[in-house]
Image (tube, rainbow, N blue to C red):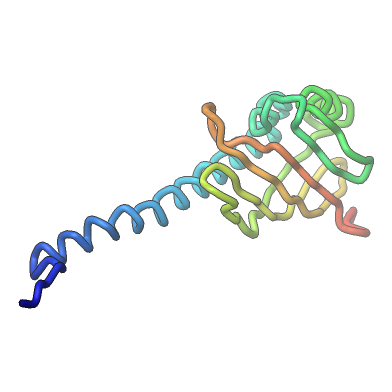
Length: 160
């Protein structure tokens, strides 16, 4: 006597669909919403910067002593220290200039983390500064936030 343990016909298709549908949804929806949320957060940062709102720009960063910024002057630790540095270096709207981000890649590192690589362009005081950035984003209860920012100017990037 031969027993067939596999479901037949409709039941087999329904079982297969029940197994694969959650996997397909998990593979696409969160990734798309993650990318959209990060792009939206960076667009909000750009708008805040361009209207002279440093605190608005800082909303993209996690408000934590562990937030880290790596740049040409070294490593800054903490949201507060980073905000103070921005206020010192960019004391008014004219000093802030006009910022643009170009996102080159958003790489998913897990359900709650992503790596963003891109370029910036800052036009201010008759000069255009360009460089690259790598941002580590993490999802928290209050949304996607930058936890680590490594920003470097391109050599000879300041042009008149």
